[in-house]
Image (cartoon, rainbow over all chains, first blue to last red; front, top):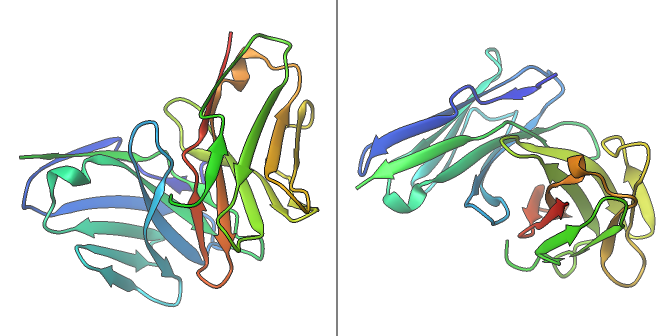
Length: 112
Length: 113
């Protein structure tokens, strides 16, 4: 029962171009969504989040879009940099205990 | 990740031994979550604790696993009689309600021989 799905295991883009990472969810109770970045042998690092009352949140090169009717969110990174190469996890929470449900991650490779 | 500490970073145990994983949350945070990541998988929620209380343990296996977060000291995830299937990365996260964000530690990589 995968409530958060990242259907692309990997993505490769050229430096300077836009990276778009996608995430779908099935649980209508989710009301808060987060993106984390993870390097090998390290813990996930928080990137950006969005509440279900919004459809867009922007922080520097990172923008997250939320389409509630489609139960879909995406992370845009522009311009992409080689240092962005990592695994990106989409996560969602709902309810009072704020536990996170994660997707399986997408490996982003930004080529110089 | 700054501020959330986990130790040890790597732990090797033989089948049947006990594993103890420690997590010190960020200063001022009194909520701790434990997650497990199996190879090629995302992180899976295990347990949510506040100081001296288990709030949600719905992700914990029914046997051999326990967790605590005492009034003083770190949170402990304890796995008794480890089996090879327990080999995974275990992450803790501390949470500050004001920011609605969980901040993760570097993880403990458990290997069961």
